[in-house]
Length: 157
Length: 157
Image 1 (tube, helix red, strand yellow):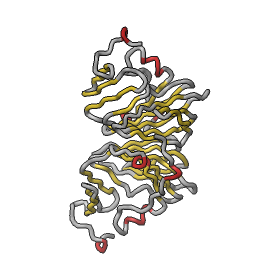
Image 2 (cartoon, one colour):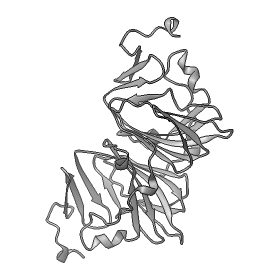
Image 3 (spheres, rainbow over the protein chains, first blue to last red):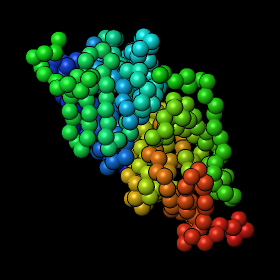
Image 4 (tube, one colour):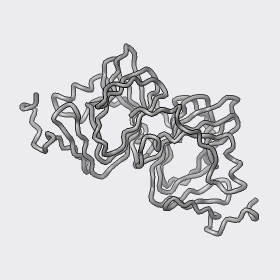
């Protein structure tokens, strides 16, 4: 069925613990796949205000990810450095490749992109630039340091 | 990694047996997910010439499908009839819902859309308007009539 995008709620917020939640201010998204009843992969339309980031830079252990830029422009950052992304440009991030990525809107206009992610029963995302990872299982997100030690807001710098 | 779309081969052809192969003349695609090393879902950029169809009208037993129109315009056809689709419009087709769909370019200009499909180890696609279905397993496509009887070109009308 055709989706009624205008009827979908704009989703804000993040699963990140403090102080990382502030890293994705200015990011909103529409859950397109969920709205269409899909369960086997996720599809989100993400909107980044000027200056906003898609996420902390991260890589997935078990889940594939795909992005297509729809409007505006942004910068893909990976281990090798920045790559400009314009409408129609695509990027793919296979599961298990330990090269973190995120997108930063360094323009003065809104940018929009489509992101698709597979669904793994058990997932681990590792963050490239901070001492953080998350295990995801059964709908529960457990954030720890990269070595598995408990996350504590007070001890994070 | 960012994909180099200009370097990707334009894929033509179809898995359909005669006489159905002619139904998708004027359809070409780029395998974006495969080019990016993704294995957990497929992502194709499909280009329909004026008059071309995305596929025979069909539904999937085990695989979710998602489409976003990128340029031009086309018509989504399902059991309830036609729905116009313009750039930015999206449609979702959850696995196991027996309401076949396809897209027809009834304009006089090229149309482009992105299509995402999950990957099931064993899949059955059933065609809505002809006496045909396909079972897909281990990279082998087996076309039969809907009741499972062997497909034979000579007996198809």
